[in-house]
Image 1: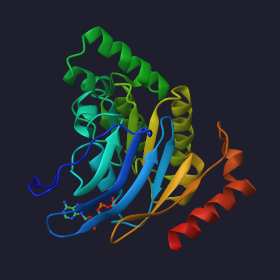
Image 2: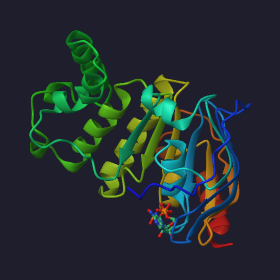
Image 3: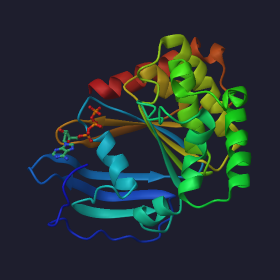
Length: 266
Ligand SMILES: Nc1ncnc2c1ncn2[C@@H]1O[C@H](COP(=O)(O)OP(=O)(O)OP(=O)(O)O)[C@@H](O)[C@H]1O
């Protein structure tokens, strides 16, 4: 994590129409790197937004700002009517990273219960909720198993279950499937969409370098450019859910992939 930014200007946090909204948001790191410049973005409740862009375009910085781990240098930010830090404290925001970050010495169940345990939720509820989310990711039979006994895809499922256990309003996923083989990746994409469909109100922000993945998963793709990091375009994916494997080979899918790729190389 970066050093505290004493010089950072205070951020205005005000209620806006969007679920999460950013206006003219910029981020200049203490070493002078302009990570984000004039970012304007409105995210509505229930959206599945994918961020694509070259390495270093500021995708992770946007995530850090939304969660209050980093302060914007200028601009306005609203995270469902409260401060980012408060939203995180209330467990309204959960994360999933490429690295599953599971505790190796704890069972699957203990790993998944951890966010609730840290919040002082009673043991019975912890167990019920862990069972609920492990069922959702198809791992209810693996509750007593240690992470090292699981495949990469299964570890990622546990990581997703742990993020869902606190019933977040906002789920942030930073290249979660980047380290998985293509078949496992597609299976997990299907599963993630099923889970998201079960909770129509959960908003998902998903970073990926993979254009196909962004077009398969999202309701809208945000395309970013690097140095300085800016949003160069947003392409809506007006394809109804559920989406299946037929969609992956459809003309519409290929056309949307073409559009996102063109925006990336623009
Ligand atoms: N703490 C920091 N101090 C200085 N510069 C930073 C810091 N964190 C990130 N940067 C720089 O800010 C820019 C945006 O970084 P960020 O990690 O947000 O990009 P990204 O799009 O997530 O990259 P990647 O796709 O490689 O993960 C990069 O040029 C990076 O080197």
